[in-house]
Length: 415
Ligand SMILES: [Mn+2]
Image (cartoon, rainbow, N blue to C red; front, side):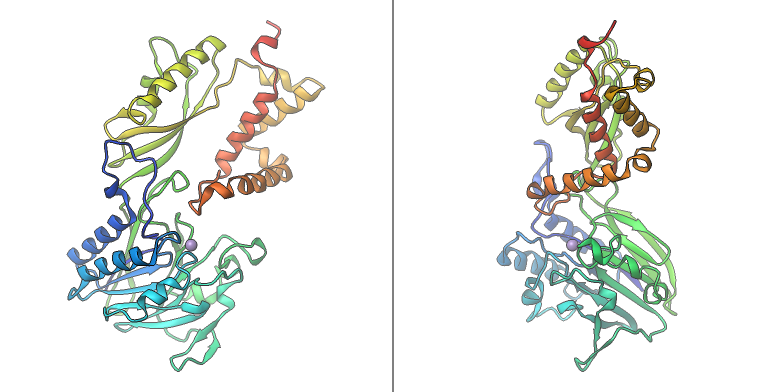
């Protein structure tokens, strides 16, 4: 049996910051959905499993119905079963849309925050969706039996797959959707063939579970590889193959570019060419400029940054673009000397050095947690659910920049 596993399609959404030269229609979730269906039907898959957030919250019911049904039309007579669970963005809309579906190969399970079993040609699938704002552990919820009676979740099948939508990195106290970090090493997951998780949009593979990630990357909150997974089982339902397939039509990356040796001969564009790879069909970069430059050179590189950004959408090379520069260029400091000073400058220099040697979180953990909470709160209104907040690495860079700004500027230095 060959199964295509995916999650978080967010139909109606689309990839952001696509340069003008490209057709935005090629970067929609809708296009990804049709392409995934084509891949499944052209490569003899038996099933498509989708672990929640199939629809985007902001997509109208009308559009959602149209996109879903266009996809299902393509699957008619293909002998491919589609098994879905709702996610926190689908709410009850997905079950409303599918309640009278004429497509007999479409199955929605795990609604109403209850576990539900589905028999996929002899393979048991247990699904749990998040069509309610559940902030407690799904593994502590009940199983809806065939005759609609609720029983405690206890799986007696020898071989089964779990489909779930929720935050596997969080505990109940963290106030996240469907948190189940506590249950990651429990029997239900450990005894599964594989547990498929949707929600985080980020791929992570472990022995018994996999965070599938989203097939199409939407913005810089979704850096790195994005695609779907292929699971192959033999006749005894043993796993013979499970692999990730890169799929997204655009990739977002954050890179550091050291500009310390910037000069008339070694321009910003040559530095960009050295640092930005063309790995995928379209590569969008956020470039974090680091290193030390005199004030004069810093001004010059700023001019070149502006030129790059006013060129068509930050063009660097064929299919390689800079969406945004982050200027973390510093003056010429001797932090080691500064750190010896018995004053505020010494303390600040000491903190910067601890970021550089990777000990900041260990030494200043409490402040880091506070910074993190504030940054999430601050970016929340602009997020619209697109996860465009700073991750730990970006946050550390931001803190470093703030600290550098406290240090006396070049003109104040004793030359
Ligand atoms: Mn979700």
